[in-house]
View 1 (tube, one colour):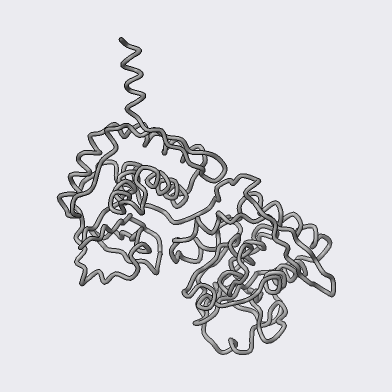
View 2 (cartoon, rainbow, N blue to C red):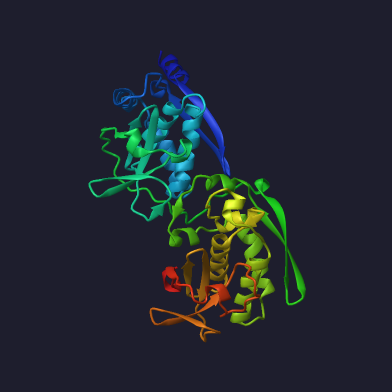
Length: 388
């Protein structure tokens, strides 16, 4: 009799499996957690879904997600990708978007994040509390807290005043933590999922060839990534395989060079090893690429190159740096023992401009493009090695 009950319990759960970067994520969904949602979207139907799934046996799935997050040290944004893929297995987005969104919201909330829903006319808006400086996506304020929209890209532009998005008043005790967009560790990928990209670069009349490992999955991770602040953006790392295919070779190439000469090499590598195109022409909108996306992409602009240059200098020399934001451009400046050229003075320290984007002139360290010499700028990020 006991055996028959155990067998029945096993049959009551659906097994799911999908690839997640370097491995496979397996989970079971108890039949009590397989909640239908075919009613008209409303405050009441959303609350009914929550009441039903909250009384179900969802805990094994949640434990599986949380254990995987901890084991693989997933940042919040990467963990959210795991939740998205899990919800997609349970309720495919194309089949029932509202049900798919409800599962994402429920799993993120039960994972401890302060996630909210807003209900409009046939629109289910998904928010999460965030304390960081994030732009280019809508948010709402409640009790002095900011809630960023996680699914804005699914609807395109929404007039939140005319649409009258009404927050769903559902209290989830576990839902307390602020969500972070910081990506300080890329997930591991299967070695066989990488391809090689040949990058050719000429320096001092010598041609350098790089066979850099790149992974197309990186673009998917950042497909809907918002406009984070420059500190967050600049500190997105390379994945392990890409790192080891590039950084040691760069270190070998600059071996024997002075520090300033080595930084010049990195500046010119970032400036000339990649084709330039502005984001409007390349993507039809503003889009910042992480360092690994810049390696992946056929084209990149000043934001992308500044981030890549910052990353290379930080990893190889770990020097103090500042980011200079002009109205239509961004550049980097590096602090050396002795400044070169025209100095940028910030908080009493002297920095030398290192232009990582192609300009009309072949700029050396410490030289500023002629069209920027009289243009005001803001220092939007300061890196101090002691804070690494």
